[in-house]
Length: 493
Image (cartoon, rainbow, N blue to C red; front, side, top):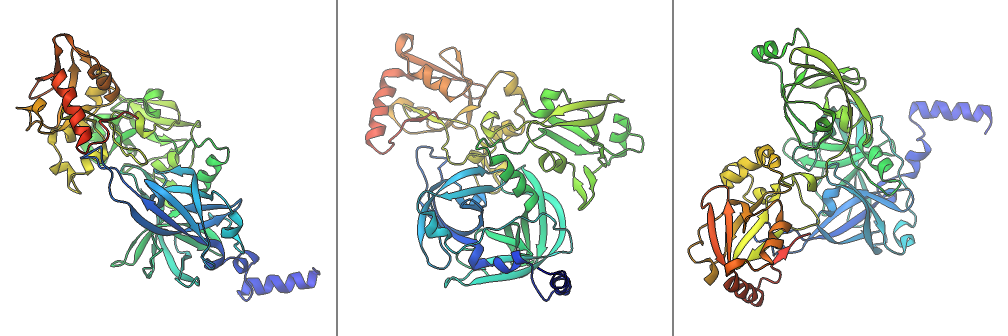
């Protein structure tokens, strides 16, 4: 191209009369595909059952190398996944090649015939330059295959929850009116023809949406490239703001900001580095943290300090934490790691796997999980059994006992083996036949053996303290339960 033509093109570009090549080549019908899923969740109150299959339809952003980006929520507990060409309607089965429920992201790939799905489609590049005040486009597809683009304005950039309780990341808060469509469960968000994020939620009343931004997507894609996905690190602390003057005086804050550590997860990054309850974190890698737990980001303004760990670092990195301990300033180097959900005493979430349980003679034992508590409804902290809610909020004493999981009696079926025990529920198990129970596998191992005298002694940490169960009659009941509808008496994996 001559220098004169280059000059003319640059003038037209700056005037907005000619679009960049990426903006010309990409459009909803050329860079997104439909995603069809069949989901089947587990029943945590009746752990041997699964719920009815339910369909879900959404849209995925086409990436390079025949990959499709969707939210993880799109394919949670999926029994079947399918990609569909937006125009031709061609369909092929898909598989998950990378997944992170905490970051709410997944990559899908066709299991065969990729040409059928990606014919004529243009992969999207990524754009991470979005700031408050920018205008983005939310892409959708009509039933006839035509693309639809809706402008939304970025109100602010902050940190908030994605999908998993307690798991927070960077968010774009945007405003704009979106139309509901049958395939609109998850939608790509675009800036100047490049992927800027994925829509997470939309309020029709407020006409506001939350968008999962590209910086998190970029970190997810980079981590998954080698096929050994590690996930986003977490510090593993519970903290309190230091706005109260009495607290500030007590911990020795003199005009400084900082957050007060009130809890440290066992085996977390903070625990391994030697951080302690009562420490006050002043800064991370030189970024000062104020009394509300925020720091000053160069592009986004005030953000929660959690973004320094879950947005600006990766597993294996080391961050320098300046703190005050018992009135004395000090610096601690924290090597960041990720504690997976299955390593917690009480699993904070469970997807694509069912609750671990054992049924013996009509006694139903489970490992306590947050999904079990959430089965009691949105108001589960008040509706679920108090002793289990309390254990979930205060796991430390059980971890100090050496427990791997918290096994409890969730329900009792009326059988000849459980006469007199029908009303028992929510009792936390401690020992069976004199052996400490640290997880459901321990329980299964003990119950697989016939005890001396033929009677199992089952002990709890609270009422009813001890119950006795006949081994022979319980095994007979187990055979009857299999014949009358409970097709599996245990799940240990």
